[in-house]
Image (cartoon, rainbow, N blue to C red):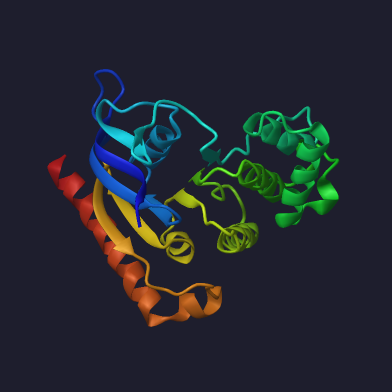
Length: 262
């Protein structure tokens, strides 16, 4: 598969501060679900912001389909942990306005119809007329995912989108995301930031592990489990536990290296 996203020797730091990312080389094929895993401080969110075009590398370059990423664009949808919905707009209007920006010239009625359709995909049919403050955290995040899907961007960048949710809602949204992704006619390329190994192995086709201080690529592992995944049987399998332990050991070894170096 051709690379949708390419990172070539990417490094990043703030002014004269110590580097946050160093020499990141990575290619992500179109349609792949990549989980970017690492401890706090490993530069995961920074790397995602670079891919989103919200920040720019000090070293190296980032490409989408062979062209430099020079700023934000509708070809890359972004979902943050804080939902980022306009509080003065209803849920359906939050999504409809995004569709209108992504598809200039589309009639308002058509934008609204598409918005309603995407809210249905995430189980929010009954919330179309509600405001974000009237929704639970899990429902607001579902609305944010619906908005990102509605943009029809070939790339979806997700920064710990379920990190603030309770375990039950987190599991529900993991399932909702994978179902929406797996049933697309053309699968989006997803880069999903997490610090949870179980989440990375449940969601991803591939797990890219960053070490910290500075953020460096310390492992790049295919996830060998077939889709569609059943949570209980996967988490009970010996293959899952072996891969989980291997990743945990890699992260622990990197942390120990940092402590010794300090």
